[in-house]
Length: 95
Image 1 (tube, rainbow, N blue to C red):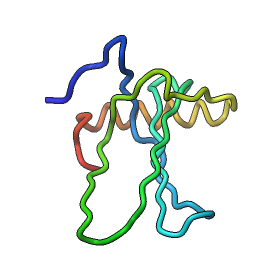
Image 2: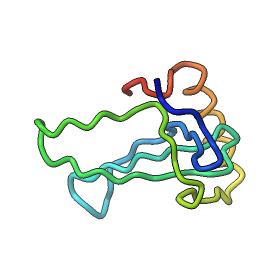
Image 3: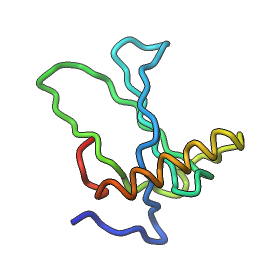
Image 4: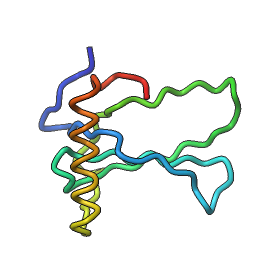
């Protein structure tokens, strides 16, 4: 079972998966809080087919690693997607 959110960590849910325009073979995973106010980004190189790294529905992030969402439209979109993911998946579900 995945650890629960605590004062030292915040659960964030996958809201966006994009490919970097700047770097070839780079994927950007964006996770957000269910209120859409904060986000966490992970960059991952797609180095080979044998390099297996699962993408989970949620991760625990250090509060200091979270950014603030300043765009109200983006905040609403992140909140809706994070809530949808939280309702449909367990945090450690592979997406």
